[in-house]
Amino acid sequence: GQQFGSDVTVTAFDQYNNQKSDYSGIVTWSSTDGDPYPAVLPTDDGSQWSNGVKTFSRYSFILFNTPSQTITVSDGSVTRQSDPITVTPGSLASLVIRSGSGGAGVPVDSHTMGVGETLNLYSAGYDPYGNFINDVNSNWSSDGNLTPQVSASNRSNYTFIPTAPGSGTVRAEASSDPTVYDNTGMISVVAGSVTHFQISSIGTQVSGEPFSITVTALDADDIVATSFTGKVQIFDLTG
Image (cartoon, rainbow, N blue to C red; front, side, top):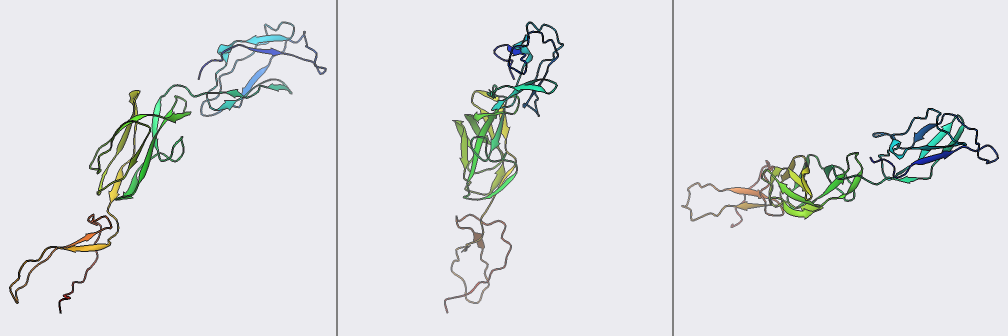
């Protein structure tokens, strides 16, 4: 997104590689730098050629997309392509919370997970043109009733391992600039599958009198399996 550091000089040659001092044509410029931000390139009007040489101002060239691009100058079928030009990212403009480090994975949108499962989050930083910079140190927080609540400072990643059902979103704010941030979609935490049941304590009962008990469905982490709607059978194993 910045102009070149130096001017670009074009020299015309004939088929024998001799400098063509009488050249005064009009050249066109093109680049491999395309969407979403195509290169800014100069327009030639054919003037200011001197002994087959013309210098184009560095301010006429801007490349946007990392990591490298080339520019090509042409007059009809005669073309010359530059060597690869390294394009480095600009300053931090946005964050995206992703599921993988180094710009890998996908943006974390709505996500459903079980108690005890792991969700890895990374705060990927981007420049104004969508180029990945690096994973940016951020301050992490959450809303809703996620357990535990997310809270961490100056870290480029966060690992969330819920201990109870709940829901909410996670937020990352760049440590260097809290106005640069991102939020996940809704994270919903559900209890795991039923692995066992718990029966409420039963006190002394009067012979022949009915009584009630409470049965609770639990998962492997002793968390109430709130989604359980099945039927249970109760047996008296005392004989």
